[in-house]
Amino acid sequence: MALITRRPVWQQRSRRFRHPAQVISIGFGTAVAVGTGLLSMPAATQSGQRAPLVDALFTATSAVCVTGLVTVDTGSYWSAFGQVVILLLIQAGGLGIMTVATLFTVLVSRRLGLRARFLAQAETRSLDLTDVRGVVRRIVLFSLASEAVVAVALALRFAGRYGEAAGPAIYHGVFHAVSAFNNAGFSTNADSLVGYVTDPWISLTIAGAVILGGLGFPVVFELARYWRRPALWSVMTRLTVTLTVTLLVVGTAVLTVTEFTNPDTLGPLTGPEKLLAGFFASAMTRTAGFNSLDIGAMRPESLLASDVLMFIGGGSAGTAGGIKVTTFGLLAFVLWSEMRGEIHVNIGKRRIPASNQRQALAVALLSVGAVVTATFALVAITQHGLERVLFEVVSAIATVGLSTGITGSLPPQADLLLTVLMFAGRIGPLTLATALALRDRTRRFELPEERTIVG
Image (cartoon, rainbow, N blue to C red):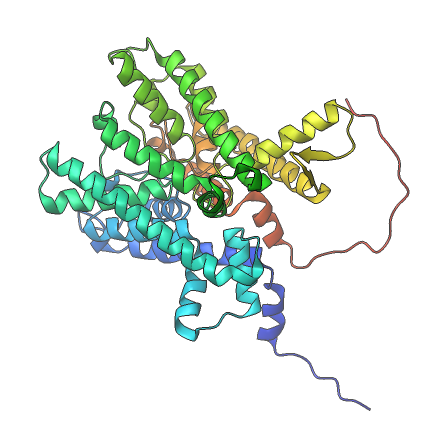
C-alpha cells in the first residue's frame, strides 16, 4: 500500500497565495509597513520626535499608493531623511512592487521563472507573457529617463527664475519630477504649486509628466512603435488616447468656465493665465494631486466636475488611479451597443469579450459602492459637509491626492478609513476582491436560463 505523505505546513500555506493578485496585495502591504516603520523613527521628523502612528501610516500608504493626501505638511514636518523615504516609497509604488521584484530577479539570477512572469504581467498589464523581462526593463528605463528630463527642466527653472541655490533647486526638481511622473502629488511646498499658477514652464512640465505617467506603459510603448500608424493601435490604446484627450479638453473647459469669475481662484488672473490654470487643474484631476489653485475655494459645481474626472482616472498599467479610462470607455460602448440592440460589443473592428465587460462592470460597481459607503461613514463621524467629504473620499480611492483642506483636521478613525481607501484604490477593487479569495471556483454545470424584468 502506498504511503500518503502530507505536505509541510509552509507549503500548504504558500499554495493559497499563488494568485498574482494576492501576492501584489501582500507586496504593497509590506511596502506600507516598512514605510510606516521608517517614518515612525525620530530621525524622520524635523522635531526629532516620533511621528504619531496614524500620521506615519497615512503618509506611507499615500506615498506607496501614489496618492498625495497628507495629514501633515511634507516640507515642514518631515526631515530630509523622512522626505527621502517618502520619495523612495513613491518610486516603488509607481513602478509597482512586483515590477521592482522582477527586475532584481533578472539582475541577480539572470533568469525568470514562470510564476515571476505571471506576477510581473499582472502588475504591468503586459499582453505578451514571453517578454515580461523586456517589458520590466523598458518600464524602469523609461520611468527613470522621463523623471530625469523633468527634474532637469524643473531644477533649471527653480534656479533661474526663482533664485534657488543649485542644491535646493536640484532637490526640489527631483522630488517634484518623481512625484509628478508617478502621479503622487506630494510637494515640498506647503501650498503645493499655488506659487507657480502663472508659470507655464512649471505648470506644463509637471502636467506633461503627469499625463505621460498616467497613460500607462503598454500604451506609451505602442505609441512609440506605431505613432504614425493609428490603424495598428490596439483597442486599449485607442480608448486611452481618445478619452484622455477628450477628458482633458472637457475638464479644462468646465473648470475654466465655472471658476472664471471666482475671486478666490481664477478671477484675478488674465485670460491666458486662466486657461493655463484651468488646464493644469483638469490634468491634476487625472490622479496627480498637485494644485495651483485653492481647491477649498472652488465652487460646488467645480468640485462635482472634479469628482467625476477623479473617479474616471487615467490609463491602465500606468501610475494613475481611478476606475481607468478604459473601464469608462468600455462601459460607454456597452451602453451604446445595448441602446442599438446589438448582441456583441464592438470597438472599431474588434469584438470585446463578455469577460472584459463583466470586469469593467465589477470595477465600476465596487468603486461606486466603496465611495458611497465611505462617504456615509465620514459624514457621520465628521462635521464637514457632504461636498467636501465626497471630494476627499473620491480623491482617496482614486489615488488623486487633491483636497479641499480638511484632511489634516479629520479624526484618527477618518484617517484610517481614508488609508484603507487609498490602499484599495491603488491595487484595484477587482484585484483586492480576487486577492481575498483563497481559491478559484469553477462551476461544472449550467443552470436553466430565466429572464427577469430590468428597469
